[in-house]
Length: 193
Image (cartoon, rainbow, N blue to C red; front, top):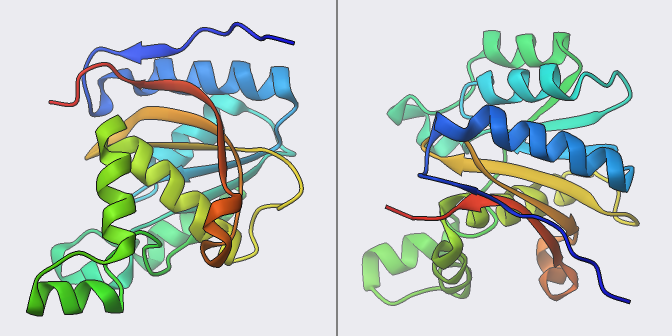
């Protein structure tokens, strides 16, 4: 059996295509009966927008923020942002990044070379930063027990701000990475620059 679907190619990275990507994500999630969505969101705005677009009170929406190790950069959820997400029915998650920035990265920063996580990360970057983040947030949400492991989920992410990438994925835990399957690309930037 073959399946022909359209991929939304966003003209450039960043927030410009957010509403188009979220609309395409909602449409495909409805077609596939996907009720679990993981979205990257630095301060919660993208997750709130996704909640509005999907407009489904049964949706399990997980907002994955940037790890606490980046608080000095101002990139982490504040307590007020977490409370806003929770009030909207969104589950905030902050954890170590599955594809880098962990203990292995500290060794590569000090001694050079690349960890396996960084090699995987850099390979996914060939599809765009959003693709890398989609895979990473799926692994993180799985490890936190916030998404089911027995059915497809949707992951939405972007580059810097907003969304430009959406995939349908069979999730896996980081320690079982080879069980993860990117089943569909719903949207991605056409140009990575």
